[in-house]
Length: 425
Ligand code: HAM
Image 1: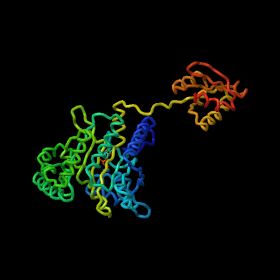
Image 2: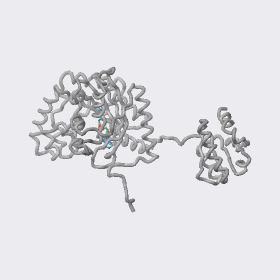
Image 3: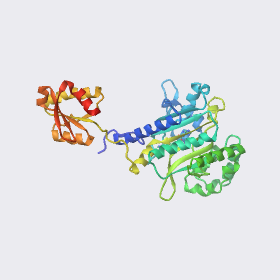
C-alpha cells in the first residue's frame, strides 16, 4: 500500500546514497570555480515573476507553461526560479556590479523549478550548477565556459559526451533571418505540428528544435542561420571553434540548436551523452552568450556568457556508469563498549575524542562485542578501545592494536592524550 503522503509529482527526495553524488559534484565545482576565478553567489529561490517574463522570454515554454507562480498576500506575483541566469543578471544590476572589475565571474548551485511533464531526467524540482561571466565579449570566454562544463563531466568520469554548438546571431543579423525563416515556415504551415503553427508568429526559431516527427522534413529544408550571420557574428563563432580546437575539445555543429530561452545571442551549446547509435540524449549542460540581457533588464549594454549543468541528470549518468563516490569514512579509532556502566562512560570518552580531533567511530546501538568488532573492521580502524563493566569500575580502558592484536590498559582520564600519541606515530 502506498503511504498516505508522498513527494509532490515530479519532485524527488535525494536519499543519502545519492546525496554523496550531489556533494561530490559540489566539491568538484568548487575546486574548478576557484581555479577559474569564479566567486560563489546565492540568490533567493523566489523572484518577481516579471524578471523571468522579461529575461527568459514571454514566448518561451518556460514562461508560458512551466512557471510555478504565486500571489502573495500583498498582491505581488512571485515565481520559483526556473533557471539561474535571470537572477544573476538582476543581482549584477541591483548590486552595481558594473562598477566592479570586469568581467564579473559568478557560480551557483541550487534547486530550480519547472512545471514540465515528469519523465526520466525531467523533474519539476531539479538542481543546477551554473557559471556566468558578465562584462566580456571575447570568444575565448565562450570556449572557456564550454571547457569548464566539459572538465566537470570529465572529473566525474562521465563518458560518451558530445558538445553540440551553433551560433544564433545577434540583434543585427537575427531579425533578418527570423523573417526569412517565418516566411518559409508559413509556406509549409500545414505540414507543422500544432505547437509549431503557433510558434511561427511568436518564436519561429524554436521550430528548429521541435522533436515532433511531423516537423522534421520542414526543418531539414529550412534556411540555416549559419548562412545568414553578419560578419561580426561569423568571426566570433569562428574564433570560438578555433579555441575549442586549440584545447582539443571535439564538437559537433548543430544548425538546429537554438535553445529554449530568449536571451541568447551568438554562441549556444549543449553537452549531451550519446547513445550507442551516436544519437544525442537529453542535455547534461547547456548555455551560451547573452549579450542583450543586462540591457533588457535596465542596465547598459553589457556582453555576457554562461552555462548551467543539470545535476540530477549527471548523477543518474554517473550511477548508470557505476561510478563510485563517497568512500566510507576511514577512522583511526573505534570505541566498543560492554555493559551499562561501560556504555555510560563511553558517551563522554567519544566526545573527548571529537574535541581532541581524533577520528573515531562507535556503534552504541549494538551490545555484542563481536558485532562491534565487525564494524571496527569495516571502518578499517587502526585501534579499538574496549570499555566494559570492569574497566569502567577501575577507571581504565583497553587499547587494542587491530593489526598486531596487542592489547594494553590505559587510564580513562589520560586515554585520549595517549591515543593521540599513538596515532601520530
Ligand atoms: P537549460 O538548458 O534550460 O539552461 O538548463 C541547463 C541544464 O539543466 C540542462 O542541460 C539540464 O541538464 C538541466 N535541466 C533543465 N531542465 C531540467 C529538468 N526539468 N529536470 C532535470 N534537469 C533539467 C538554463 O537553464 C540556462 N540558464 C543556462 C545558462 C546559464 N545559459 C547561460 N548561462
